Length: 195
Image (cartoon, rainbow, N blue to C red):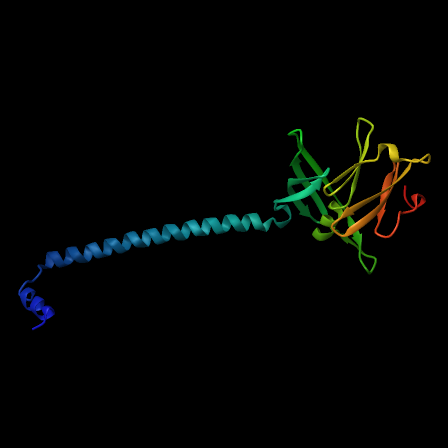
């Protein structure tokens, strides 16, 4: 005789009362109710979390992202928004002041139709060199991690020629005192070709 058969024979004479059986069944049912309540609470939590994410993502143009940009020769953390060809970003400058910049524009497609600039075109624009005329009278060129002071490099016509390097190679810059600059990959742009 096996152990299983011995246990069955020993306990076969015991019978539970109807009250005991009812009580055991009620305990099983109460345990299932607790599990069902817990599952319902988890489902509500997941639903609320999902709806919050959808509400945030539904406003796609206003989703902010944290990225790094080269600002005045330093890689800087910025909070940026891009929507319909326009961008805006905020960052903290070297003096701890919160700064805000924005811009954007339209691009002419192959068919001549104007369209908002894409995110890639905006990021390309933001990676271009920058010329800054400071309040102290100095003039600086910033291109990624390069900082070049060009204050004393303007000729008698108010034109300065500078070469800088970016991730794609050499950029030739022609800078006119107080009226802008132009860049080219091949040679210095003619100062008469821009204002």
